[in-house]
Length: 297
Image (tube, rainbow, N blue to C red; front, side, top):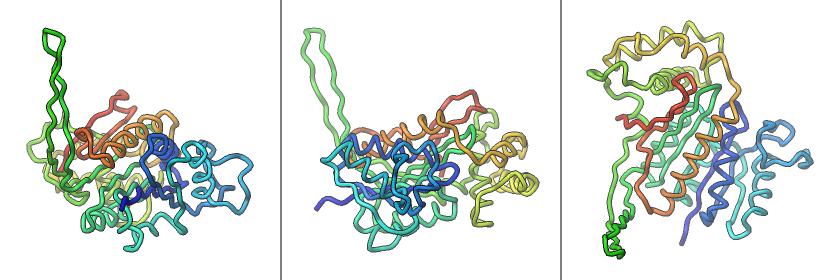
């Protein structure tokens, strides 16, 4: 029996790209999608276009979003799980899923979710957009997919090669604690270092950083770089401060990260085509607005 895609949303800073991801995967016809977000519609972010302005006051973001998505593609079953996004991690819910997507969650929740997904063989994605920064993480475990290549001949005919391939993904724990010794500081993604520092902060404090945490983040950044075997100068202090200071997100960043995540989710569910993200997609206007894929761990 076909399982479902669990999309766990959160109407908090850094989570608004979820509306774009949800729209794209439903329009693609993934089969079944369950949404989790108990935020009242009255507190919805203005950029969430899935929640209509006249949504009933007692309706949650997940309920209103599900109704909109069902109208977009009636052939996809869109349901709602009650509770906060963490409710999706309950064994009875996770066992029903092929893939879990977390948007806008702290690193402590991401770490817990990835560990549980690996135990149950569930593909896992997480994404965060904050200020000029956006990133996504993918862990498909041992992912088997169909690879196709079409070759055109000079006589106008063509041949197609079809192969079944397997790709291994590192866990979140491995990807955020691996050694970077010997890596070129010039080539290291500043955003990867930034999210690694913030991940450690969030796991320690069980909350995201704010502007008041700049000094604590700077000290933590030095520790993280030393533990990874690189010079602390690899992470500019101004970028770390910029990430902490801005809790709102930008529609342009949402569009880029949301589009990439949706495309990768569709490929993962269909098991057709080589995944492009293994295991981080990183996008930052501070780095010139160039997206990059990094494999860590």
